Image (spheres, one colour):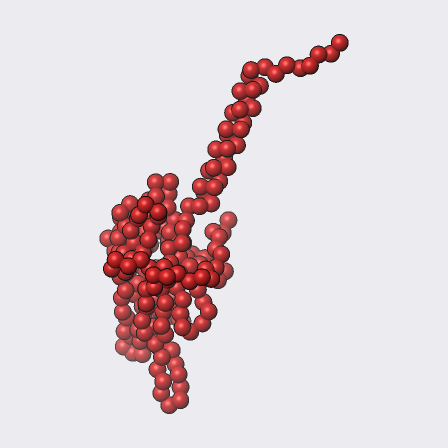
Amino acid sequence: MMGKATQSPLNGLVNTMRKIFALIFLLSMAAAADDHKLLVTTTNDRDDAIDVLHLEVDDNNKAVKVLHWRGDKYWEYDFAQLDEGVLLRRKKNTKVVELRSLDFDPVKGGVFRIRYLYSGLPPFKYKNLDLKLRPSSDGWHLYNSSSPVANLHLEVNRLTMLGLNETIGIKEITPQSKGITNVPEVKKPD
């Protein structure tokens, strides 16, 4: 007569441990997938291009790096690179938009300086926009003075002369507190 197999207490413990490890794995995967948050988008009055910048943070909400997407292109900038300045836009061999961190602390935040080409006519003329990056209870945020910034709108500087309408730089970058509604989906490459 065959009896019903009994489950030993060891088997029950092993099954419980498997469930716990599976739960830990799933939670760690969810945390890893959510390690960067939208910082700011950029739009312009020339074309439909949208740049998306995210801030990657570690488990302690410490800023690690800035992630940058434009269409299907992707870049990562750590804070050592940002201290030196990174080129966000270039036209031929001319620096158009550069991002630099000033006195940045990965726990407390600091200032990001955006240096942009105002006029590409010799002698080139650049302008700066300084924004504060600060942590808060719900993540990290950019501020222009005390106003939150969700989008930076670039207004093209045009030269109209003899019937020509040529782009020569960026007239102004306007920080906007309201974000755009059509933020492109972005994903870190594998």
